[in-house]
Image 1 (cartoon, helix red, strand yellow):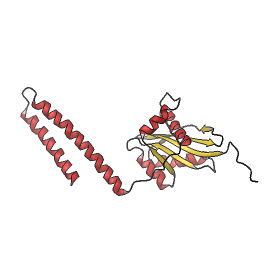
Image 2 (image 1 turned 90 degrees about the horizontal axis):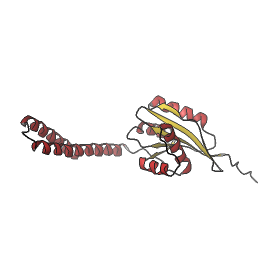
Image 3 (image 1 turned 180 degrees about the vertical axis):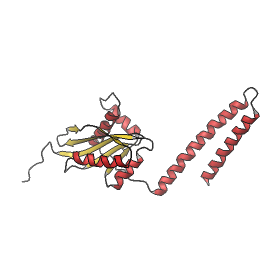
Image 4 (image 1 turned 90 degrees about the vertical axis):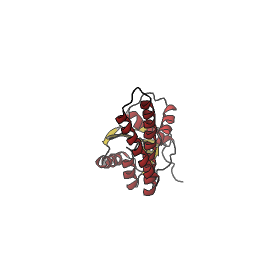
Length: 199
């Protein structure tokens, strides 16, 4: 009869990553069969290719063999994208989570403070406690469509804000015709850009 695995044997290893524009904080943790969570010391890396390479080297030294390795990162603006593609290209399992999912999980914990180190540990814990969907890089066509949709959204918002400014200025005391002309030119530019996007 085969021996039962030790209750302290690693069941899952997760790297939680709190990312910002220029750097990110990583925390490695693992869960055991008896549902104990163990966390390592958080470490900061540059949000660049050299930082990504250093991350994999650092994780390799802490990853307990025999346990699956999973990276968990929050979708913070576009700052996570380079790292996500790097990890995918290096055949690493990865989950990219929406901020509201992370926020709801944080509310369920006793965590009250908020620092980059604590956020990295929180993401690590979330990955250890939950079964998360794997992130798959979108196709080039989907990436382009997403970029165009974002650009259009920004232009529509700018056009609405400019319309309010024009209306307010038109109804101010003695509006300057040169300012009105410049505002009209800006409006026309936004109209042209939206037409170009919609073609």
